[in-house]
Image (cartoon, rainbow, N blue to C red):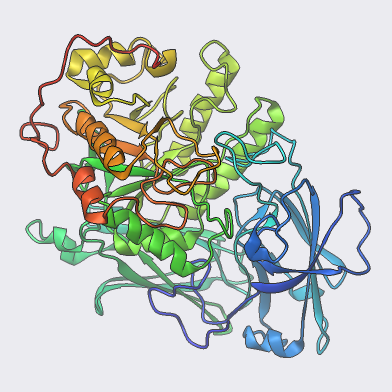
Length: 624
């Protein structure tokens, strides 16, 4: 797919929606493909098979559909000079950049038999300027070798199984290319990365701009911000440095009685258009279309705060697996539908679990209004290699996504995966602390949860995973502040310590960030369905789910919740919808339950009023 003009604010298929250019070409589609189970380092003379990129070879959508252990795979794609022209490339001065959204786990890329570069990290993007490897008027051959050892538990792998067949809460592996590949023609002096942040009290936006290299001579940068066609602010500056920062004033936002009309919220997801131009000494211009949202997030006095006001979080766990394409999204339309489904079921947030999602998902969350908790895929062993890998990959992810207004929380660790001895191993505790502070250094504007679920190091939000299967059992720990404190300062569900640091904040908001997980799978008659609890009928499923939601909604001390989970994922049949995204109850019924339409919450944090709950149930003990 090629574009011939500067794209508008929302270009559904463009792989990197906050840095959009006119001249590009998608390389998704048919590639030559082959396995290399003998770890051959030599270039393959021929690749006998075909694969549909960006779908992993384990998935049916790839056209390969083989789920066994194949640690090394090869890809090849040949492009004609006419195809390069379609991408907008001219041989008389333009540069041509080859982009990969994500390749799991290690990638070597050649162009015309010359190494273009290497990348390690299965969830982070990378690109290479391949201009100097091209030959005028000749075909271009792109070759990719991807290595993903299924037994290497020191790799950040998330929910990808280390056994040959999925088991428990672990699913099919994703080997090789699984996010879009594209070519982009750019001027010599061009933008490599940009990020936006907003300062509501000062009525301004800050742009951090990074050029692809130090310019040969100073360049001129022009920025224009607008909303619905009206210009809100502009800036121009000259720089000879590869990185520059500029504060752009928004005079319209200085009116304190009207400034909220431009703010981003899930209910009103307003976005500003941005046009950024870099002009070099010869007059060549790199033009980028972008967007941003004006909003602030934080915590205050036990509340999660959005735009300086307490905001109650109604979240759901999303794992981003599809039966036909696994971790890769079937299409941009499927990503939009996932966001729309989540909102239609009454949620205002989603916790992306053990996966760094396609940036187009975040675009749709920005556009449709859905808050996102972004979480790093875990490694499962603690070692210096694992620490180095996750630290590098997580840094790349935060830098990639920190401009999205929908992202409101960062989660570098989950349930002590990879730090299983954190409660008594100081090295593992130091690692969790380091990830917290690293994330805050890269992005000081959002809350960070050091270790979601239990055994928290320093965290801006205290989160609890509680899979009690009855309402009274679930409610017992959250009836009032003393009951909640007994959990946080002692043993929580499954007998886990919640706080590991004596210095941890006692005023951080508290959320139950996993609960429910009720399996209802009438189509599973082979005994493979799995959940934390089960329902035999739709009526029983509705009754149990309603009781669990009401138990948490009735608590006067919680700042929000996250239900497990949005859709069935492989053998985990505990979704509110099945794997094909069909809700198991009428959407309006689920939405009413999620919103707590029948729960009296006056006087609570939202505000709301505590409901009567039994006080004779032991709190903070391991669940049966």
